[in-house]
Length: 122
Length: 110
Image 1: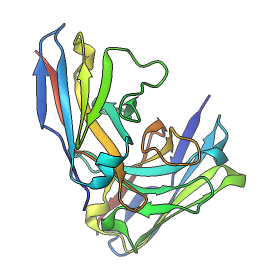
Image 2 (image 1 turned 90 degrees about the horizontal axis):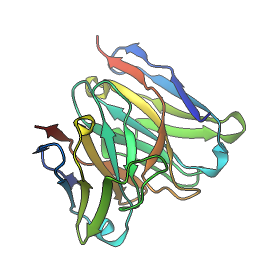
Image 3 (image 1 turned 180 degrees about the vertical axis):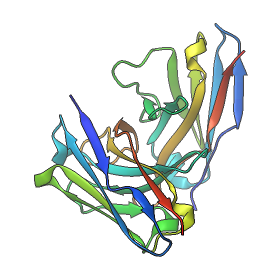
Image 4 (image 1 turned 90 degrees about the vertical axis):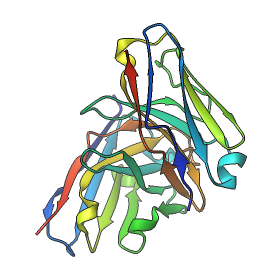
């Protein structure tokens, strides 16, 4: 069974840091790009960051550039999102998602985790 | 900055067909067929229903179809059913190894 399990969310004060993790199973992890997508309460989906199978290609939405870092460890079947200088507007449910395309991102995410909630508040 | 525009809401009666549009403002949207569509029911995880503009993942009903022409992609739901009532999002490749989602379209089955 293909599975993505996120962890690391929680309540954090503005300006602090948090690292999200996503452990995957059930598919050949090192063949697929991965993404982080977030959804603020009552709002739509927002693509946050993506990483290619070999970590050579990485991208971020403008609002998190310079604050968030996506990375992956293919030996551990894991993808991470390091979030620094958190702001109230980063409050959201963060999903880890597998790209449908092999090697090259197709921006179609065919497998999603259940998400982990990040709340930025003092 | 790349952006995708969707209508806020679309409605139809059971059995009818509806179409949701997704208009992109970048040349990359026009050049590449990297447009996908997602369905999300309240409180649920998004579900991929179309990728690469017109491909359906395994297990997705053929009542869902996608197309793209120029700077507009479209999702058509045929034979509308009560279970199709949900939020729908388009997503595409944007410039510089980034992605972008459109604003949600709420589909109501009358």
